[in-house]
Image 1 (cartoon, rainbow over the protein chains, first blue to last red):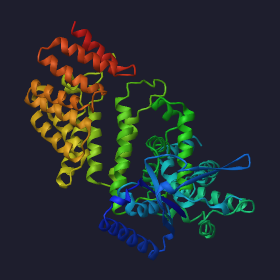
Image 2: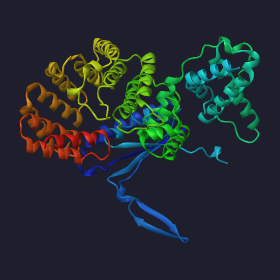
Image 3: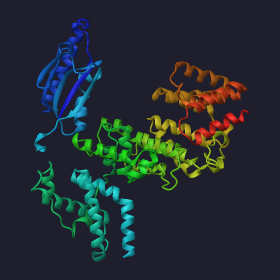
Image 4: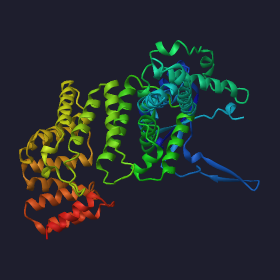
Amino acid sequence: MKYLCMIYGIEPDLSKVSPEEMKSMMGDYDAFTKDIVQKGKYVAGEALQPVRTATTVRVRDGKVATTDGPFAETKEVLGGFYLIDAVDLNEAIQIAGRIPGARFGCVEVRPVMDLSKHP
Amino acid sequence: MDDLRQELSRIHREDSRRILATLVRLLGDWELAEDALQDAFAEALAKWPVQGIPGNPRAWLVSAGRFRAIDKIRRGRIFAPLPEGFDELLVAPHDESSEPEFLELPDDRLRMVFTCCHPALSEEARLALTLREVCGLTTESIAAAFLVPASTVAQRIVRAKAKICDARIPFQVPEGSQLQERLDAVLQVVYLVFSEGYHSSRRVDLLRIDLTIDALRLGELLLELIPDEEVKGLMALMLFQDSRRTARVDAAGDLVLLEQQDRSLWNRLAIERGQKLVDEAFASGRVGPYALQAAIASLHAAATTAASTDWPQIAGLYQVLRRSSPSPVVDLNAAVAEGMANGAEVGLRRVDALLAEGMLVGYSPTHSARAAFLEKLGRVEEARLAWKSALALVTEDGAQRRFLERKIADLG
């Protein structure tokens, strides 16, 4: 079963993060990604650009309305995600708990809907 | 025929939860398993009068339930796609005449407990689901015990089951490092069930639901299947509290404080068993919060009079508990124990320090503790105000409210 792991956290001020800290964080993510790829649990995963680059799009009465910013202003923002393949929620929780971002922010785990079972 | 009906209803009462747990494991679907359970008992009622009661009734019922469920799936498969993993189920042979008698069935209730207490479910859902699926309480009984509408409980259970299915919460006992963490969640549910039964001042007169008995049964089950030191600690803690059940309420249904209880009413058998479990937990060398609380309760149980209570040792145990599982309520208990050990002045100072930190201002027992120390120091006016603060924070009618009202009246 596929689970989407959404990584939320307070966005760091990148100008204040030292190159060493950045390197160690990237190293942690690299190691984690390699590990789940090797174990056949990885489907996809990306880091997102800062929330200031977000644009929210809605269509109302056939017209596209575009607004600046995320759909909801929250302190903790979506910073990246992994799509994983796990046997059950216990395994998904175990994998999510090893995502480096879980140590600072949190990871929301959502099972992906299997559309083949909803004709 | 009457004997048979009686036997069948005994099996239903004692074993239906265990049979359901095994059917959930075999069928991988809760709804299907519940239907299968009903079908199995119906079939027994029809067949046993002719065939006689089988040698292993539980295995017979599991087998019959499974067979009926497979039959249903076969008949329905033209209409709906098969759920995953059902193929192996369909090829499994079913031979009613021989199989059940020799089948050694594992006890699946522990899987059931861990699934019902999964941390991915809300605390309310865990409670309702455990009482429904493990203890076999009806939705109406659970609703009456927690003073919520039956429809609310039903909805919690339906939602929890949907999440178990949709998010694929597995029907298994976690292993390795996950077991300890998950066991904590299970113990918490058991203790919540017990506390609700023990402290509830509500009277559910007609139904007379006693959640403490359900919690003790759950404790016994855990003790049998995972004899971990914290399971022993929790069981001991519940036994010590339960040993005082008749002494803590007077004829009018009012609360009697530990200090004033008639200690001859305490259940000695429960205390002895609790003491044995505490000793075992401490002998393991890994003492957790439940074993610590049980040890504190054991010191109260060991005192033949309130005056002979070993308060210095209780205060010491609370300090250990504060370090291992800090919480404002533990801080308050530690402050009270210290006051009992070293005098009301020390106790009052400790409680006031906690109030100054702001954490316990909205908690009625803090003001009660303060009032009791003020009374001992002869500061009657301040005590009266403190009892009133405690009373103002009690929202429900019942023994707690009556106790505080009496305290204020006693001060004249």
